[in-house]
Image (cartoon, rainbow, N blue to C red; front, side, top):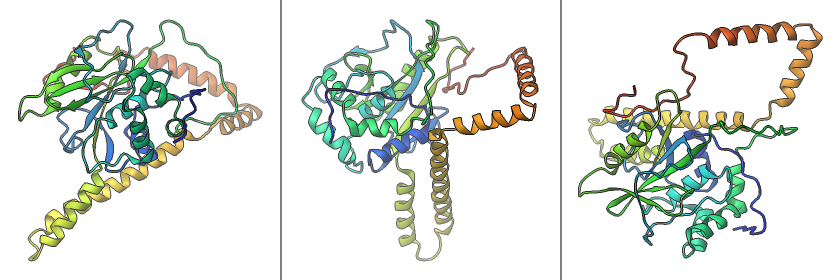
Length: 330
């Protein structure tokens, strides 16, 4: 593992997308896991059990105290965020460090990091993470290559979004937020209770702090690798299918495997587009349109359409408004 303790370098912004997080897992050589986006905490299809943790994206506000009690329990691996733009990877790694399923393999990069940082305090763990070249390389693999950089600074009103993780450890549920000094204990886990049910009101309460339309939420779950699980189920059913009575179930599982294969192909295509530098194409297109005398007219048409669209009542441009069961967003 390559640690460059003298310079943490630059970290790019990461999009809140299951395809991005799933490919980051592959980049870290993590085996047995994938990330699924949730539209509801009752999404049984997305919430393939067990659910190892939830990654929640929200608009960060100065002075937000959170809902929970700080804890310094030694059985929790928690690293603070000490560098900008690293909160996506920070949330994912904080979650992965607390997965204790033998079916999950962290891979050499994260295994070495955990072994190296396990006896450190949270701030030093965060410093170690931010200076790990291998981790930063995987994170920055989603940066878009550009020919030039635009130095555009946002004002005080610029929205800042942040990732936190919810994870069950022992008989408690904890919130791991790299911007805090310690994990927050947010819920108890009585015997037999699903931890996702226990954390539901915590997320609902957090969402209730914001008015409708003010914020774009995003919630993702760390779950078992579906294709691997379906393949194991298919092999078991095939062996037990002596008289053909399981043909229908085998067909369903085979269809699920094909769906997962198509989804992963889509993820790879989308991530390739995220990384691609479209600047040369756009510049060349603008030159051609200007040469043909079409550019000014197209720009004016675009302005007019944008103004007309902005005047439409009830327009909601949010990407995702997460709705949870038994909650009405007024």
